[in-house]
Length: 371
Length: 222
View: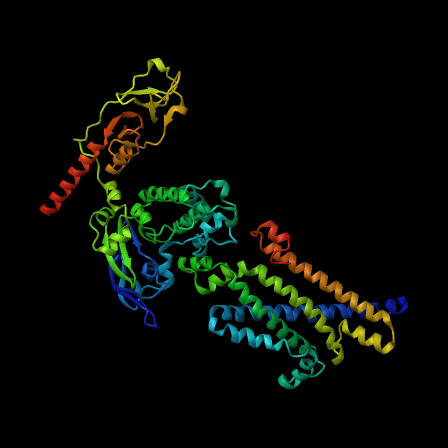
């Protein structure tokens, strides 16, 4: 656990970067520091490994005051991932990952062996091991950066805008991979980002900071969306916060999943049974939904060209957001629901999803009143 | 070409060539060794960059002959001692290389140095294991300039009687012969080309990590 206790950072010219910050980053969880530029989030993170020294207050790691630990020793206990990866251009991928163990006296062969394991852990093929950083894509470099930070298996990890420099598709992929990785390694992580979407995806806990280094709110993503502390937080979290907050509540058992007409791609037209409104769900050979098809569009057989792909699907047990999105994106107002394997279960109507949302709000309000 | 003169002076010419090599190489190596910490300092403390680079650069404006003549008075050596030449050229190399080293270190990506610091590299470890290896192409490109310029400055020492290839020029002048002068010029050129290629080769060997196009083409090295 990393604990900030009334930490402030004031520069000699009087600029207050961080103002009286008290915060806990719990063991084995991801704490995200988020806020607009100039809010002191990066300064706060850098005070943990003493790249910057606080003006007042204390930071403890597992109960030990960091000001009493030699800076270099402290940093070697904390993995560090930086924007653009900051790899050593003159070292191969393998030797980048093994750099710190080598510095600390591990044998070259041993360091390389460990580095190979780490490459696998972060999803990099071993054929990349002997490349130099300039020969890698941005996403690959970032993975090497994560592997390098884990080389000495430190209990703590600091990440400074780790996924900001890659394109949105790679970023989403890296974020999901990183969450799966964290499930395996369970590090205590402090991550800095300016991107609230990233914070909501990655954070077990999110600390929102505002200009001047004030902590505006620290809460789980769910609470942050449902119950922002003030107008600043609400604004920062953004416009679609109501919709996003549905990502944390599941549909209850009262939400009806209705039977629907369906057919497998390639079925002859005369065998097709359509719903009264003229639609049916087109399936692939594994009975996974592909989209909706309308009677007027289907020719001699059910072909891909007749299918409307607009509708998303929700799997049973998914958050209400997925159900609402499936219903809203459907050409006929009914959302397609699948089982865990992705096979068709049935549909859910927009009205039933909205009713489920109302029930969830009521339950949450009742729970708050009771506590 | 006067072949008689050439053949009867062969061993002397060889002696002069070796002397010229040493008088060039020792100051180049010592000057670089001194420029490394000074350049690092100038890079590390931006406030001092102008002072350190400016002051050391100033030495380059002192005419070499004046240097050779004045040094004995300043440091108490004998006027004909080759050490005067070595010291003067060391200072010239230093003057050139301090800026090169500082700028080479500044060209190392900021994130790279920052990552090393955050990982727990001590300042000296950062310098030797990260900054210096990455700055090698820039530093050695600067060294190529320094070494070629040293080869030509060394010849001036003939005027104060320190023997090296420059002595062939004074000899040729006093005997009224073209051959010694041409021999001196050709050998100076030869040494320059060989040393230049050696440094280029060293740079390539030390930087297997650079993109091939940059290493062989007209990139930083050219």
